[in-house]
Length: 182
Image 1 (tube, rainbow, N blue to C red):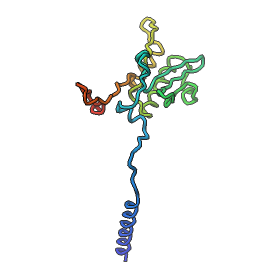
Image 2 (cartoon, rainbow, N blue to C red):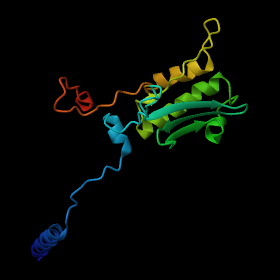
Image 3 (cartoon, rainbow, N blue to C red):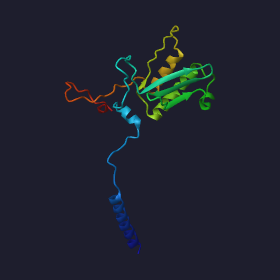
Image 4 (tube, helix red, strand yellow):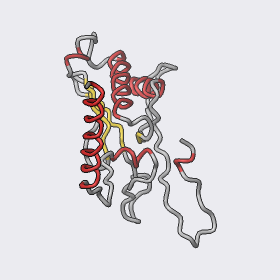
């Protein structure tokens, strides 16, 4: 009697599965709900601005480092104005491990925290950082240089890849597709 019960349930399961598959209509379009996917493939829209504007303003993500008298804040800003990743020495979990919230150790450790959050969020490459530290003090690294070097050491690339623009059929040369290299 056990065999008949198990065979009956298998038949019932198959019948109910066929009814569900036959009655379900699948959508004609698939919507991408992960906006970082297109940026990783280098085909996402990147605002270029008007043709009279200064070149170099097109970016997907931009790195900002702000220092006040009591705290240090670093964040990555999307071109839409959204801030996906942020780290600050105002946060208790970071502050309790620091001697001072604005010294070289704070820059070093804040860059490590920001880098790990960027990697967890999926922003491993493509952070536009145009600032270059101009302070040179007899071979010593400035705080900003320490911050940038530690971001690079943690695996975050500070240069965005070029955007792939779909070539027209009349173009003489066709560029390589970005996703062929991944």
